[in-house]
Structure formats: structure tokens, C-alpha cells
Amino acid sequence: MGTSVSIKTREGTFTAFFSDRGLARLDFPGQHGAEKLSARNDPSDSPELHRWQKLTAQALEQVLAGRRPKALPPLDWSGHTGFQQQVWRALLSLGPGETKTYAQIAAELGKPRAARATGGACGANPIPVLVPCHRVLAAKGRLGGFSGGLDWKRRLLAAEGVSAK
Image (tube, rainbow, N blue to C red; front, side, top):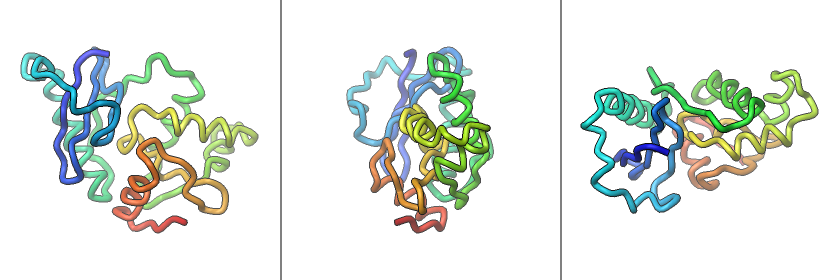
């Protein structure tokens, strides 16, 4: 996948995985063996990677504080389906505190019968938090699922002033 970097935040240490195209994956604290990083994953040898790491860290802090990130690193969604990428682009337009249902996102993409597939794309989102799948709810405003767990989804939504069922 390229280079993995630990990003310390007030909510714990996230792990960012960068390819030569940009941020390819972001893991929550304690997820996917994030603690097993080695010292060779130091971004200091690449100015571009260092810049991407800084952008990722700043964006993470902003989202964790309930704000829209001022800038994102390049996002590398290669290897994912066109539909998944469409869903993730739609999620980027959701601002802090703004929620939609899977069905609403599907309808906006011109695929009103694809609510389930939209939920699947949200679940497959490799860059949660920054690509805000936490802002997508199940029918009737229920939480639905979340790759980081429902506690994380509640925390992220609460930081944005949203209380979900």
C-alpha cells in the first residue's frame, strides 16, 4: 500500500496509509493492527508525503472538532468501484451536522433503488472521518452501521451537534 504513518489526535492515534497517489486508507485508533508500525514508515524522506501527512492530521483535528476540513490530501480510491467512488464523492459534499439517509444519497446519484448498495459503499469507505460516512443514517434517522463502530459514529455526530438514535 505504500507508507503508513501514525497521526496522534486528542481522540487517539489514527493510522494513515499513503500510496504514491495520496491517502488510501485511514484506520481508527487500535484498528487493523495500527500499533504494529515500524520506524521505516517515517515520512520525512518525502516532502510530498510529509505535506499529505500534515494535511491529513489537520483535517482529522478539524473533523474531530465538528468542523469542515479546510483542505484534504489527495484521496486515492484506485481499486474501488465506480459506484463506491460516486458515493464517496457525494459524502464529501455533506457538511458538519448535515445528515442524509442511504436512500437519499442513492436517489441523488440517480439510483433510487440502490440504498443498500449505498450502505455497502459507506461500509467499504477506506477513509472514514475525512470522507464522512458517519453522516449517513439508516431509514428513519437510525444510526445504521459504521466501520469504526457505533460509539465512534455517535462521537463524531455529537461533535457536530447531531444526536442520532
